[in-house]
Length: 171
Image (tube, rainbow, N blue to C red; front, side):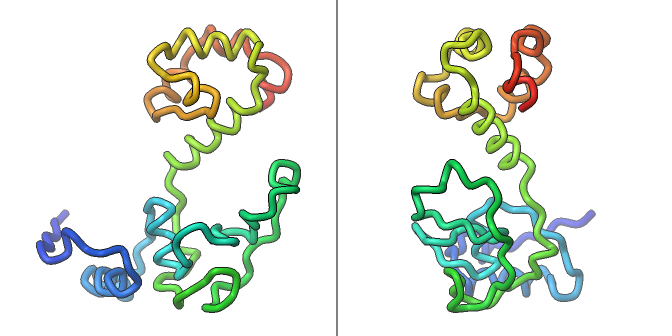
């Protein structure tokens, strides 16, 4: 397997033009690579506008400013088109959305965050988490902010597996 050394592209600005240049350099049109990147780069490749936008998700039409149904509504309409000028799309997509792979770590971190948020704060399982990760601040623990190694450690923990109950176990 060869390495590609691109000294002029090591420090590139996160913009539509620099992503076009990068994709041309690695001959993405020829090889049709699948792309796995963080969510910010994925949004950039699909032409989404940066910043606090109303529809930041490239998969669905989640409205980030609609506070009422945020924690109640679980299923949002799938995003049908990625056309400039429509639902926070600023540029034409640089890659096909079918070639985007979601980063596994982002998925794991999100699932863990949702799991911890659903836990009973006074329950045995949550108190066990506080003991298992004493270096994690209370704020991070309450928000479910864990690292990949913490998650792996917890998934292999037989004591934790035994003490979670009801909804926690189903989650």
